Length: 117
Image 1: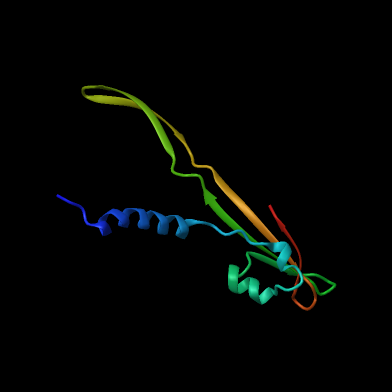
Image 2: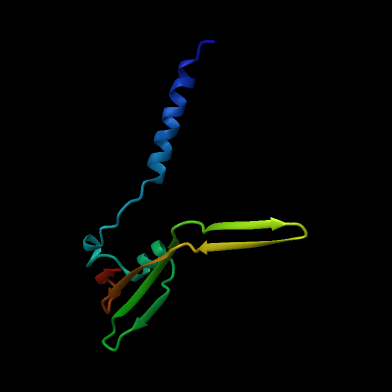
């Protein structure tokens, strides 16, 4: 059976689309200082997890992203003997990570500084 040219190219094209679609883009926060507003940040990042208005009129807002490293793993051994059994299982929970982005906006709601933990 001879493969058609389209069937040879399709897997390669699908892999390229998947790779490009999964690529993450880094935000240039330094480039946004002075021209990125609080309203734009809410539109892009959603409502902040925490925010506070300072006495000098500036606003500090923080966004928290949480993710885990994967599923838990269980390792166990057991002994079985009629009529009952005994088992021992050790469970290792997934590691949870947290990333914080804190943006400080001037009195006219323009980005003044940023910190990412």
